[in-house]
Length: 88
Image (cartoon, rainbow, N blue to C red; front, side):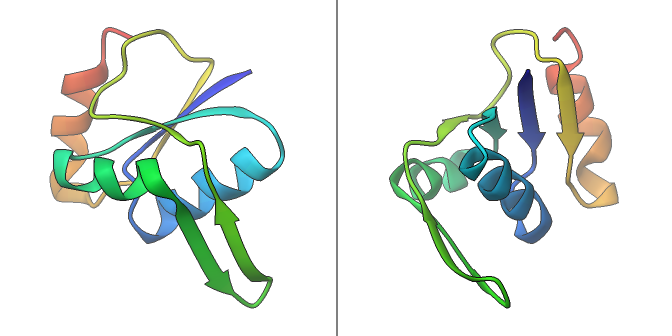
């Protein structure tokens, strides 16, 4: 199953990291300034310990169809991110 997480702030990053740890094919769709950070490594620290996730597939828009899109943006960015990725 191909999964895309659109918006990788606090909640989107959790979805992204935990899905990747379970070996799902997951793509992160983020803003330009976030791309370089996530391409290096995602670190999740919390009650479940520290998780360091590498080798993430990160881009600023979808380039191919996915089976599931998880939209994790603030309401004021929702329309923009859907419009930018609606063809997939």
